[in-house]
Structures are given as C-alpha cells and as structure tokens.
Amino acid sequence: MTPVVTAERRTTTLPEAMPGFEHLRRFWDPAQGRMVVRVLPGEFYVSGSDELVSTVLGSCVSACIHDAERGVGGMNHFMLPEPMGERDSWSSAIGRAARYGSDAMEQLINAILKAGGQRANLRVKVFGGGRVLAQLSDVGQRNIDFVHRYIEAERLQLAAEDLGDVYPRQVQFFPHSGRVRVRQLRRSDDVALVADERGYLKRLANDPIKGEVELF
Image 1: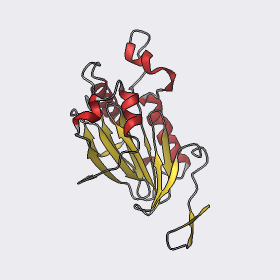
Image 2 (image 1 turned 180 degrees about the horizontal axis):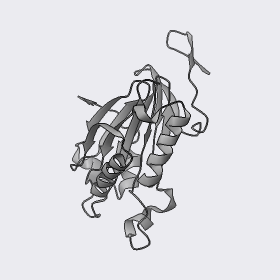
Image 3 (image 1 turned 45 degrees about the vertical axis):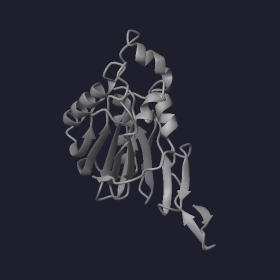
C-alpha cells in the first residue's frame, strides 16, 4: 500500500498495482478521488481495486473486460488486429512498439483469470476504431472486424460497444464496477496537428475530459 496525504492532511492508504503492472503510470487524482492509470498503445492493465483506467483511442481499439461477481477487470489498447507482413507499410512504420489485438485480447483475459476472474462471468465492452487519419488504410475498421470476430469465436459476452465514426475517443474504465465513460473528441485541430496515430495519442494522453459523457 502507498500512503498519500490528502488536502485535509489525513493519510490515506492507496491500493498498489497488481504484480506485473507496476511499470504503468499511476497517480492519485483528487478530482476523481481514486488512483488513475494511463494505458498507452501496446499496454494493458488489470485491477480489482476502485481505480480508474484511462486511454485515448483513434483507429486503435480498447476492450474493457469485467467479472462483476469477482469485482475484477482490465483494459487493453491495440493498434493493429494482427501481423500483416512487410507489405503493410503502416505496420512497418509503427514497428515493434505495437501490440496486436490477437495478443492483447489473450493476455488481458489471462491476466483477469489469474487475478481471480471466471471466464463464464466475463463481460466485454469495446471502443475505438475511428477513421481519424484519412490517408491511411482503414485500420480502424480492420480493428473493429477483428474484435467482433474474436468475441464471437471465443464465445464472450459483448455488453456494450462504441466503435467506428471519424472521431477519436477518450475512455475511462472502472475495473472494480465495470462502468465505462466515453467522450468523443471533436475539435478539428486535435487531428489536424498530428502526423500519425502514435503522435496523436501522445498529444492527447493528458487531455482532460470536458462536457457530457456516455455511460456504458
């Protein structure tokens, strides 16, 4: 446990990350009243604590998977559905830093099961896959098609989705309760000022959510 001194000068003991997730960025957010975890492309995070897991998606997709009976869940963030070989120039451009959906889904589910979740109880909510960069092939649609195929093939229960369109999204997931908040980022300069998906995601990583959100 990590002690933190609040504004009232009281010491609060905060939950530590599960083993294997200590490297992800976690910080106390007084406005949220809980720990916040940033998930970047190629990463995933699992928790059974009352934390908030946040990411920003362009053409990428995130799956938020939750076991309501055990109160454990996690989020991933993948940039491509699966390896496409050397002919795929966008895949070559992002290089080895990318995490493919075929790996990201399997690793997230295995980590949730290791944390005490039961496969029969898992509920999946999926987000992202926007066509935010018109000059690229429709990577977002490929990601959407992949995640639908994966959920069907693995006989998982799809509880909610917000996929496609042309807007990036900011997603907040509460792994203990399974609740998700989503906001589409509609400012034109958010997309126009970035050179590629990775640069875009880095720029928006700390952009605060403003206005109304959709609850899933």
